[in-house]
Structure formats: C-alpha cells, structure tokens
Length: 416
Length: 113
Ligand SMILES: Cc1cc2nc3c(=O)[nH]c(=O)nc-3n(C[C@H](O)[C@H](O)[C@H](O)COP(=O)(O)OP(=O)(O)OC[C@H]3O[C@@H](n4cnc5c(N)ncnc54)[C@H](O)[C@@H]3O)c2cc1C
Ligand code: SF4
Image (cartoon, rainbow over all chains, first blue to last red; front, top):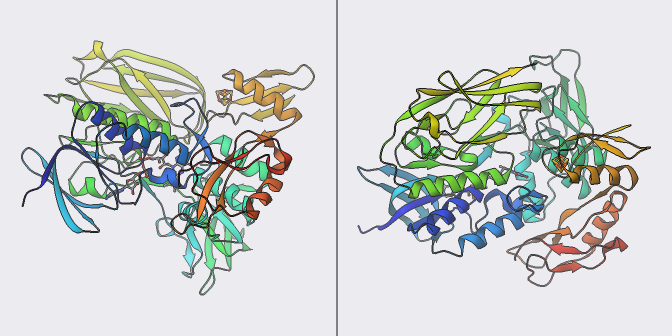
C-alpha cells in the first residue's frame, strides 16, 4: 500500500490545530490537517457569544468570527485538509507514524514524521458526577444544548435547571433566557462560581438568574422525560446535607460540570498524562514524553481563553518544525497551592529564550506571591492581589541563564 | 460608592466608582474607567444571537449587534430577530437588520454561510 507522506499531521481543526497547521505550513513543512467535522473551527463554531480575541486581535469577536480569522490565515498557505475524517488510530514506527482514519470513502492511512494532537476537550456528563434517580430524556450537557440552539436552531428546553457554574453553563443560562426559556437557577456544589466573574455578571446578574452556591442536584425524576429534580445543600466537603432537599420542577437538567482534555489517541500512543491537567505531560516545546508527538490547545489543558489555545498551537507548530536534537529533560514542580503548571518538563537542550508557562491555582487566594526557582536560584517572583481557579495565568520567561540547572519549581505563598 | 465588576475583558477587574466625583479605582486599564462611568449612567451591552434561515445545511446564522445597545432594549431586539428568516447566503459583516428596534445599531452576520 502506498501512503501519502507528510512532515506533520495535525489532528483536530479547532483553534489549536488551525494555529499549529498555519505556523508549520508557513515554515515550509508539508502539513496534513485532519478534522472529523464537515468544517474547520472546532467548538468555536457553536460559541456565538463574543469575548474571543481580546488578546490576539485586540477585538471582541464572536467564536465563529475568531475561527474564520484563523481559517483565513491557514488558507494563505498550502495545507492538505482532510474534513469529515475521523482519526481512529496512530501507530509509531521507528522513524515516523502511521495515521489511520475513516471518512466517506472508507478507511485510509497516511504517514507523518511528527504528530500534533489538537483534539480539544469534552464535557463531563451525569455519569461522572453521580446524580441518582431515573434515566429520563432531558439531561444534557451545556455544550450539547449550545449545539442545539446555536447550530441547529432547536430549543432543547422550556424550563431548566443548570447544574454547575462553568463558563459554558453561564453562557447557556443567558442564551436560553434570551430565546425564551426559563432558567430556574444555576446550582453549584462548590462555594465559589466555576466560571469567570464577568460571566457571572453579564450572564446571570444581568438577567436576574439566581446562582445557588453550595447546592447540588441529588435526584432526577421522570419516566420518559425529566419532570423535576431534587436539590440539596452541601457541606464544605460537598456532601449533601440531609433535610435540605427541595423539589424543583423543570423539563431539563443542563450540566456544566467541567471539561476534560480529549486524549484517546494520546492514550493509544502511550503518551504519559498529567494527573492534574488530565492532558499530556509536555516540555516547553509542547512535545510530549513520546518523541515527535506534540499536544496543544484544550487537549493539553483546558484554557478559558481561545487566544491562549491559539498561542499553544503556534508553539507546537513552530517546534514541530524546529530541529531539536536532544532531550535533556528536567522537572517543573509546584507546591499544593497551585493546581497545575504547564509545561511539566523543561528540555534544557531546546530553545529557552521564550518559555511560556500556564498555571492555575487550587483555590481562590488574596495577596499571594509566586516565586519560581531554578534549583535554589530565584528566576522570577510576582505578587498577585487576587487569584481564582477559573482564571488561568500565563507567564513568558527567558530561562537561557539556567541551562545547567537540575529542575524548576513554582512556589505560591498565600497570605503574604 | 458603588462596586462593579468590569466586563470589558476576561480579567474582570473589581471596580469602585464614586458617584459624586466619578472617580474610578481598581481598573487595570482605561477601558475599565469608561465601562464604570457608563454602567452607573446608562448600562449598555452588545447582543449576540442567531436568526433562522431557509437553508437546510445551515438552519440558523449567528449574528451580533455592531455596537452596544441599552440593557433594557435587549428583549425588544430579540423580538425583532425572531420575526425574520434569512433567505440569502450571508458573509461575516453583512447587515441583516439595519437600525434594529431603533437602537441605532445594525444586526450583522458573524458567520460565512
Ligand atoms: C461545549 C464547549 C463550549 C466552549 N465554550 C467556550 C467559550 O465560550 N469560550 C472559550 O474561550 N472557550 C470555550 N470552550 C473551550 C474551547 O474548547 C476553547 O476555547 C477552544 O475552542 C479550544 O480549541 P481546541 O482547538 O483546543 O479544541 P476544539 O475547538 O474542541 O477543537 C478540537 C477539534 O478536534 C476534532 N477532533 C477531535 N478528535 C478527533 C479525531 N479523532 N479525528 C479528527 N478530528 C478530531 C474535533 O472535531 C474538533 O473540531 C468551550 C469548550 C466546549 C467543549
Ligand atoms: S479594567 Fe481593563 S483589564 Fe480590567 S477587566 Fe476592564 S478592560 Fe479588562
């Protein structure tokens, strides 16, 4: 069998994959971009609200507008696009990879020297959060509701309860209200909202939609179709408090209980994953611990801004074209006040001049101080007035002076 | 004194406005000050939504107001969007409804069909 050969295969045509493919093509690589849907843009196609591109374009764009800008950039270069094409398996060989996929003409394969995984993330479902009761229609994720309303023009609900205060849930609370549905309330088990503060303001407060913190859904009722849910208060360990139950009538329960990086292909390739991000462990070039396999965008770690997703795609695209001869990896460790730091490794033999770090805090903190050490030397320190887990932080550092160190550590001190 | 959250960018700065002197604090940039002063006099928002089309491959098209509208006009603009069906293939920026609900803004497409 003769397979077409590429320098780089990018899996996923969302903003991460688009940016990776654009940069790699600009650098002269022969690139294949593979996307399972009929058009490029990824999840942005259904995000009709605005707020994208504030950093990258200094403009408030809607999701489809942001995606179109990225697609236009891609189209300035030669890239082989495979649409309606689902990657089923990638196999590593001694010096390259075989990518198996299915599309309308059946199953086929291509070869590539390097792989960039830009497969995005998926939403947690009710199975993963343990709601009891019947299994009626009307329990759906916020992303599914978003797809119905914004792409198919269908209303999945007249009266709903939203469980979880992630950004997509907040945005859908507003969207469904605008379209005439009644959103009884947004219920969040944690004691702080999961989404950005601005979304609590412009999606809930603006429309008088109540937000109940430290509350969760404990039961669903209904035989064919959901007709009510049971809401309970929870204690500080998020366990339901007996006696606090109340029944709320509704036809739908919409879940916005978190996003997890999509890494089925990475797992097949035995790419080690990070327990904190649930994405691949990478070095600053965004190469995973499997040589020549890169990861970017929400497949790597869930970002709250598409702008950062595009940035990580660009890093992966550029680094997949760079000549990295050696991997001399040291660890980037963190203390417990930090939820995660990406990258988790630094390759001391790769470019260190522009190293981009993304991190999230474990809890909300006021007056915290971050210090980054290379062994015992202080590389960087910064005071933050306010840090919240939903808001990812980004830092760009020059690590050239530390190319002989044994490891980096991120230490966040709180209450300083 | 009034406490506000700036919604002009994802930073979500916590602002304090003195209604008497119009002094704003807590903003990381000038947009925050502009936002606060408008919010205490005439709060405005941009609106994004969808409009039904006649096309099977694209049953709705995403749209936005090309400027901000007073907050209390949001639902009257939504009502106008429900009244029409797009019959022409549109591109990003094409005007779908001019001067919608007399709010001095246009409804424009945000997607290439
Ligand atoms: C429902 C939902 C709503 C969101 N809303 C927002 C928002 O409002 N604002 C925001 O900033 N962020 C939002 N996000 C986060 C959003 O995912 C990122 O901003 C951004 O779109 C991530 O880009 P990406 O390229 O990493 O992933 P995606 O945009 O998800 O793109 C991944 C692409 O990979 C393709 N793919 C996956 N597996 C395969 C395979 N095996 N073969 C072929 N193709 C494959 C998918 O079809 C998809 O097109 C949302 C996420 C979700 C899930
Ligand atoms: S003040 Fe400036 S930085 Fe802060 S949220 Fe508003 S626009 Fe963003």
